Length: 115
Length: 114
Image (cartoon, rainbow over all chains, first blue to last red; front, top):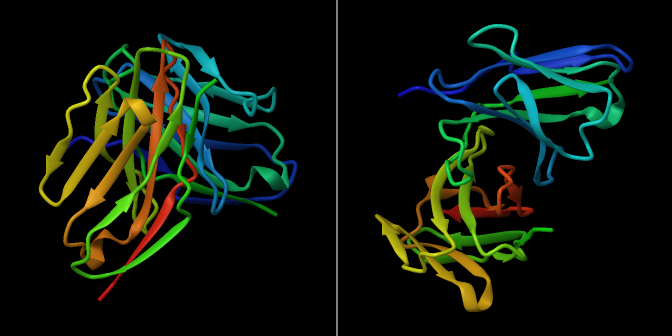
């Protein structure tokens, strides 16, 4: 069964460093998402991406964040200058339709630890 | 604005007991979709069910059942004859109107004891 994959599974970085989190969505999916989950808290939406541009973003997704689909398979989230509060699990998701009812399939997550 | 409330932070049951996880949602849109996701200790998010706002029919899938009531804005999830493998955090989520972002509740940690 096709699945969303994410690398790395765990990333440790120092405050102020740039990190790139990578995702490979399910191959025929059209919509891509990033969510984050601070330890013990709820999952929060960051950004959605369709047709090579951002379609929605939350207040969390400020200028420190960017997303890119550099080729036909990868979808990346870049945090330019990490802060301690960026420590969280980051989930990538994809869906195969434009309508909002299409379920989003989540990857296993990347645990980002900022020290 | 949309909101999902899961008032039960933690529930603990003994194996084979039935358990209901509550979910209350808020939205001004007439078209919306409700979801349940399971997050086992390994951390991934597993899709369980989707329900749209026009379909109040309850659904059963094996030991799982869902009760959607628009009158009380609730979408509750029942596990019948719980098993240890059901131990996980369960999230209720909402997609509302034309937006595609999922709004999650805070989750309910279910522990099923042997």
